Image 1 (tube, rainbow, N blue to C red):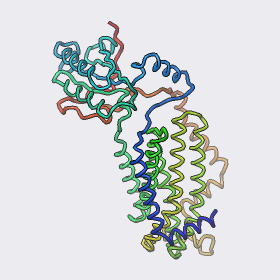
Image 2: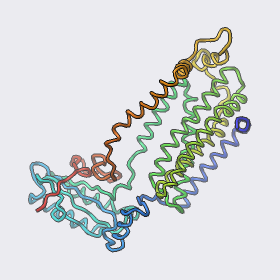
Image 3: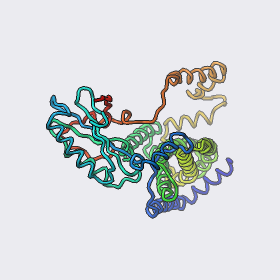
Length: 433
């Protein structure tokens, strides 16, 4: 394996521009496939063979209206009023009348009928039943309901839309991923003391994620690909993409500091650290692909999508990264006196007559091997202690109570005069009348 990877690293270094162009073509082809296919991600959650799935199929067959998705309109009285105050009651009636005529709406269940009113009368929930599932909703359907909610706002009443139908809208997680990338870049810059070196793991990781995400969107035209599969692919792709590239990059810089030529250093780094990358990636791929054994479709898609992303990360780390090494040349060599140079010097003189002081990692390894029993006990007992809270874990499907506070994800912002209602996350008592 080491010899094969060594040859791959040297070949990619020598034909650097061909490798870079090849990966650019792969990205363009994946993007074109997504554009031409025009597939939509599948947001349905099904477990074939389960009692709940069988019951839902029966409901869909016997009661088509009840088989569709639903949304909610949460009415919150303000200014010392209640939802039964004349002005608020009239506004709620008008909003529900407009909602009943909104696109794809099958039925409206007012608060008085469902008894979803708080005991103090300040908050009420109306249910909007749609004829179709959330994945079949037209693009303007939820916008229409959000507009109706915004128009019903007044100084004494706040109206917020929410519910299951809004679960498929984008949640804005891209900002969190961007923040994570910035933090990773800052940490890599401090650790590597080089902006160029810190940017390489991020560049290769983003390349792998781009290829995987575009490919998954393209496959969605022919296969049921869930949005959770894409999210998992992005998370795992960024994690392993950065790690795998960092393994090889660190070894490459250490070889450069030891005096190797860039070509020999890149080939040797891929042949040594690349071996660990390949075996680590193979282990992760097997573990993720094993999710298909469970027989649950969405888990199978998630596992295979993530496994494909890891495979892409391994290929990029062992081909694109040495090509970038070739483009960078000697610019990745650590500065004289840096930590990388000192580490290379220690490695070169290890075991010699004037050997340098061992590193922190070497001292830690010596301590663990000196007392293997204590180390093994701590490694087992630590996770067991951390897992104690799981004994009281209660599992259930998410509902509105687990959603973030504020307007529903992806919905249009309501007028600024209306403060954030207890709305999409409001939990009302059943108050029989």
